[in-house]
Image (cartoon, rainbow, N blue to C red; front, side, top):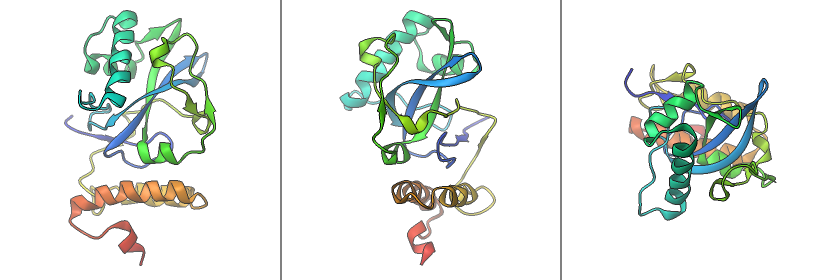
Length: 198
């Protein structure tokens, strides 16, 4: 399949750069956030990269996540773990485990209304999460594309425009969407979104 771009589970924009991973568990028919422990760069394969050893604030939770995964899912490789979760084969405490990916700028722009992580997780994985994510869905690789930039047939402009309309009354999220769009726009060698709006 090659590289592909999934969309932010909250805003719908194409992920690029820094991304927040939100851990989910399925209770009956509903997915619920259980922690928001991981942040790294989107890898264009539906996952995030392993954070560098030179980035302890992000690497330490990733290592804790992998220790937990090895204990419960018998995997040692992050690629194998992400595949297991995408395929619906990761079970923990009788619940299916998956994840959602959220553009880091969008995540940071959400209101600071925090909910505690699932108490059954190891202490090192108990990262509170933002209440705005209560109805978030797990990653859906069927809803992906291969973007080459912002403009053109393989551009993500339409996703950005939809998100800007949806969040027009939230300047913080609009600013985060524009930052993401400017990263894609840079691939076109053209003007930023701010310049396009003038």
